[in-house]
Length: 403
Image (cartoon, rainbow, N blue to C red):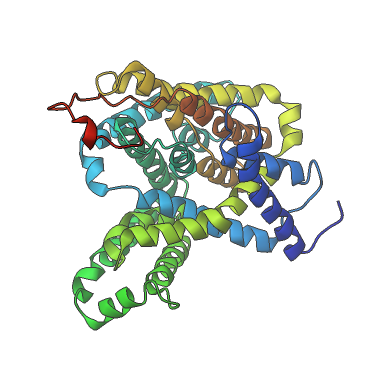
């Protein structure tokens, strides 16, 4: 394929984004989540198949899409939940995964299989909450105990690795990274408390009145909040996903007006344009040649994603969930991609990660998105609601004529 301009490349990416949900319905058999088709579409149009190259314009849109992925993930999180039982179990499970990852990656480092100990170890403990949530929403699985436990598990599986990246892999010293984390946390707390100061005031009234008008005040303020925290995180030398996640976490308390209406608008903007571009671009960036040269590494990391992140969940949640839902939670929590991509980029930029390991990790992450949610949703079944007998017989004349 000849080199295309930014607009022409965006048209092709948009075409993949538009076709993916249609194919998800038309393809026979088990319905494939459209995010999987977006990634596969990116591989198909990418430089190693049809030859379409990424452009700076597409990268910018994809970066905003990545931010919206984490903003919407943080938007789903109730901070109080992290201090309840689901949050406590999630912390225990992630800590167990971190210990297992340290032991496994330490062994791989000792035999020369891995160089970037910290980056690879953290990669094996991550969860793609923002990636899995659209799949669960599409399958109607956001209600019930499994969803509550996964929201906590996914939040910890994103937040703790992000904090570890900021501390251990930041371009700043660890002390400077801790100061930066504290600074951005204070900014987020101030933004979360801001509505208390303007509640009932003229600014709050203007925001509410313009929420559904052409001014779309709450939506514009939300995008401003997202971009501001992304810029702030970047200036502090922290990973931008931390800023996006914090933006989502404070948004429910920060945004004036109807929060559910705002969520619908963010869904429309995010899932309608920016987020699909991010996943198609992620597919375009997969290094197929390195994977073809060392397919065993992809298989090794794919198995380790499930073993390191997933297996501790079977033990930690043994009293919280029945066996079937524990397996589903294991599969969903072991699904990862965005943070894994960020970690491989850090490893490559510092020269500590082998290129073949970076490609294999990203490939394993893509496989986890392709396989684990599909298996988990295939195991899902709607529990029948018990039918309660009527308190008294219904007279024939009172019955609905359509019965």
